[in-house]
Image 1 (cartoon, protein in one colour):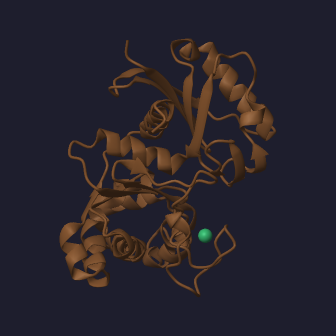
Image 2 (cartoon, rainbow, N blue to C red):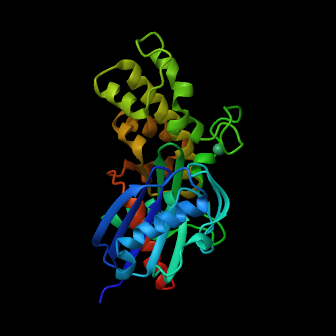
Length: 308
Ligand SMILES: [Zn+2]
């Protein structure tokens, strides 16, 4: 009989759940709003009791759990989860008893998305970096088919690599992080000058709206995306120069703007990256599926069970 696993992806807005078998076939999928306005332990209790009611833990007691957090994979200790408002909190200790979970592994949500995307890729590559472009910027690195992780704490926080040493202050405490240019939370800070003098002057625009205006042919919106690609390229070229990556894949809500920043990100990466690496690296966008993190989390649970 095929092994199965439950993957859970706890995000600031939604919690997604996938039950898969070891071939990657999806057996069940559902999502619900992540509870808000409660203590961290009550939120965890509500999430897991809710999932338990669906009966998926009766299908499999192997569970992988992705969290938008800096998290310790085996202990479930969360150092910091800005979008959930959690800090220094042990998620594993807050799990309700008697719901049928035998083994659970934890990972950062972007790392789970990287595993999900790698498993869904048709061709296998040696090295792949997945960069999630959303409210914040996350990332996951796959080397030789395995997620690069530190057993003590989730790794690859590409959003907090420095793009401008004198840039604006980031929520992490540093300045000029990639996230302060390319995260939705910060985009208006540098981009609003592009719509000064239009009817949107002084307004906050979301990345989706800016993409819509670019699609409608507005030049100011196209210029925002060109600049976005240039900033993103600084972070990407640092990664490619370090790791000689085969593949860089963007995912997350802002990746919807990819058609408008594809050329500028590639052009700028080519300028900033060593020539042999430029020839090798492929830069693309994953087709967006909000369940990809939960699928990756389920794969991590299956691999963990195998001892690999
Ligand atoms: Zn930062």
